[in-house]
Length: 338
Ligand code: OKP
Ligand code: ZN
Image 1 (tube, rainbow, N blue to C red):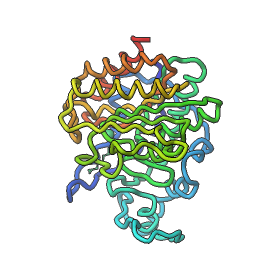
Image 2 (cartoon, helix red, strand yellow):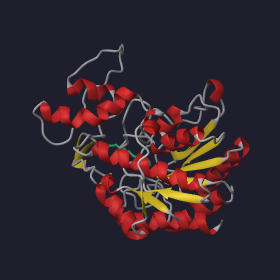
Image 3 (tube, rainbow, N blue to C red):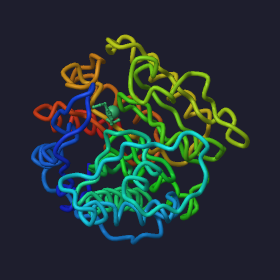
């Protein structure tokens, strides 16, 4: 399968993240990107579609913040990665605050998404990779893979979170709508619920969002991904959440996947976007499902049976040594059933 990326995506390299009250090495590391490229080969370069498709999803003030945040951090006399520690969840109002600590809290949903020196360049490259792979699909490619890193499914219109800064899947979906694609389905098979993607399309009846993920009662992002979140307004019924317990293996995963695929079929989509995460792997260091490599091939085959033009965007997956092979197994399964 053709795949697309931008070298700038390797430049985002935060050193650490808050974990259970202490510091751990940043799990979403540049080695993930290198591991995928080592397995899949260099692929094709992302083209530059500019800022407009990003601004079709994200708030301009948020995009400006991403570009300036690390510079403001350095200007405040800090070193290392910019991280927030105050989050305005109470009595929110539009205050135009300049201090980096105030800005970063207003544009973040968690304290584990640091902004490093080249975060913007990398996130921008990942979004352009998604747009380039989408273009290949709209030109007639049956499926294409955007090697997105950093991932995107946790961030929303005006906030970052969960290692995500720009929502690559949402940016591709809005671009597809702009090019005349009427009905779109986003299938999120990352271990974690794609709360940002859900949020962006929650009231959009043209974009169906289905997600299989660890039950948010036990796993990040906790507040979203519960089965009773089903969309609102014109999007009522076009969000489907299938939370699964920790320890889920293929025997529990496959029936839920089939239910999601059936719902995608019923939506009548013209384009499928898959948010693929390999953090459902049994050996993932931060996750608790038990999928094996061959399950990814089976997953790809079942998704291919939908017989839809398919854009795959990369999300998580932190067992770095196994990552390339897991991604390749999924893409091969998706391609072989074609
Ligand atoms: C991103 B993706 C503290 C917990 C923070 C964030 C998980 C983000 C996963 N270290 N965990 O969905 O793979
Ligand atoms: Zn994940």
